[in-house]
Length: 501
Image (tube, rainbow, N blue to C red; front, side, top):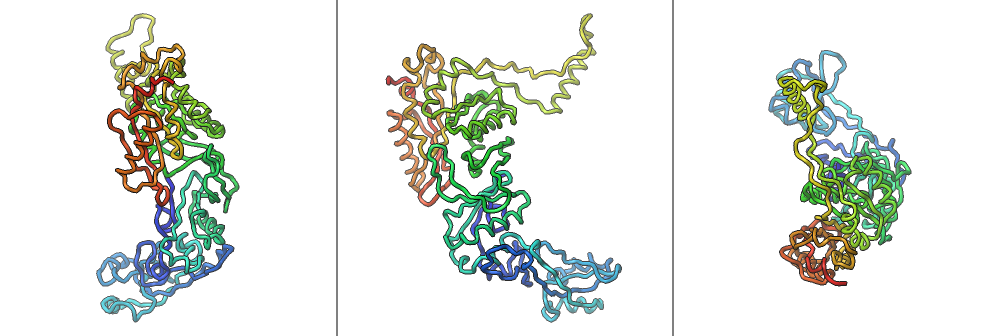
């Protein structure tokens, strides 16, 4: 499950934080309450002291015979006054087994609504004080951090932090946050671990990606286990990798899904910058044949692990080479070593059971010739698989910083000089047989139409030719102010593929 999280509600989806402290005092987790259940202010705390988070709240309680609690609580006069503190029951045990305490959302008896007091008095119900004991375990991460961080940090409307989770690891990005927050980065990380049972390690990106070849960035472990080896599930595939060694962006899960949804089981996909397989493995699970490439040897190492773990070794062939070299080689590689045929559709256990029963019934009605077993094997799907696949139908180029610069590698890729005697022209014999290229890129233009026009111009310049027909574009996400990530999809022009070099 994705995990782009933030400290506001608490840790469920990205959002701006923190709330102004005055708002937080009487508005906790979406429930309005007249009782101040916020944690004690501990601004300036640099080392997390959980024992300091203790608070006693005195509220009004009515001692009610236990058989009357349900009926009494549902009346209009009482219902509107009961306690509404999140994660705390408004019915508690009394000093005897025959009664229960019904807690109200008021600290003093005189503050109760007049109709509530009259209703209780008519039934001779006794009112008494009740002490609520709250501690560190009660408050969520957002509330704890509001109590710790200096109040002036909350007054800046642009003060926003989000993080994503990858397996057991939470990834923060203090690099883009105000420097005033850095002294509290370790305490923030520890609170995140305390309040999220799935998170065992918190890391912080200390700088932008400084390895332009492998797209990895420097990081520090702020709290938790000193391990960046993670196992993450996405699109029903399981990925294991060292987060410090490879590029992984959980925020792209929706885009991975969109691309895989475009593919057909008969497609042959060439993933030029495959990473550890977020496009390749889900595509193979769908039946696509995939050649997955990445220059980073660590990506290649973990890609091998993930291919085996997800049982798609027959459909995913990994390589480790430069992207430009991969583009020049992939057409020849598939001609020499075609990919397996389209696998038959997977049957559910109910479908398999039904097919087996049907086969057994048919066998019983028609006894087999002498010497053959009367118990047939489970029926297979009747669809015959197609032949081995040689034609690349889809390219994925997810390297938005420089992917367009690699497009010149397609010039003459099917021509006689690169084909070296192979019959590629018989496979890619028309514009309709040319592969679709999904190329990712950044742009500073905020208007989508202008951005698409600019991307088309850049793509055509790199290819050295005009595109044929319409291209498709999609705004994937906003990376930073004046920096958007787009997918630009187009069909490789025939004249480019067969251009003389």
